[in-house]
Image (cartoon, one colour):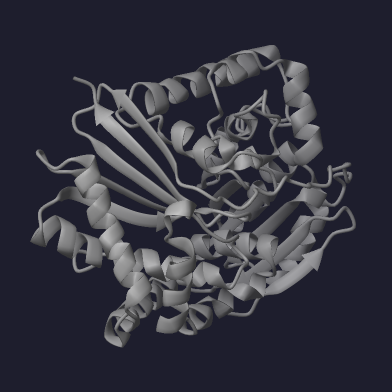
Length: 411
């Protein structure tokens, strides 16, 4: 995949690749702002902006209608590190996409009415996802257990509803002008648009937007964990659930790939270790999963499972730890390791056949390093050895590095 790059005078980075297998074009605007950039007493702002950015900008009162009339679609998502906006549009109407994205980067049309509407939407989402859904508050329980200093200690949606309901227009404006700037953003353009056309349209629509004073980040680092951390809660849920986590490296650390492979060895597919042994053979769990956070700063290796009726959380935890112990004592078989690597490679290849996926990936890799690293991902996974996996497992899967949450059904 040939990747092109152009940097505007205002600091906006354009990354591009051409794909003539489609008549569509994707624009992905990644803003380097997430929940970790929030004030501990004013959380949920990055997620609030995911909604506010569709509420109208200084020259365009309605974002969705012009894009729909041009045959386009759009969406957005937020996590603790970034806020990501994307759209797709037919090639003949691509300028509509540049016009829309640039105008809301220039300035939103801030109003008490718009803020009130989106506050209501986000508040309902908070209640639905975190307060009224079984196990919905796990992020609010596990993250503070894992992080004592770093702002990863709260989930993307925010610490509490009040932080959003009490947000003022001035606070919201200040957050926008602090982070939603060309010099804090990456624009990825993929699909059937030449690099020359992409540069021309980017300069035309984004070039006049002034740079802003984006604060330099200096997030506090977590001290090494020296003892097991545990929490038990009781809630009105159907069954007990086990949540385990181990602190792991940051995204750009070489061990990241080993952690990702370990999570797949444990739970990717019905033949994976946790599913095969603990769900099908021993019938201790009705479901179980292992995954990594993949965050820019030090993340979490998480295991979540629901024991079957009659199996205690203590028994379930012991069974999981026994499987982790095997990873520390015995090298993963080459055939098993190759299967996981093959699955990743096929997922990577098929995923990058979609021009929108490529746009999202290019922006992300440009943020954490350079867009060209996307082409090296398969090679980096392929380079992980069984010995590397064992070393990482031995270092990470220890009691002193563990976070255990017992989520019990209230009697």
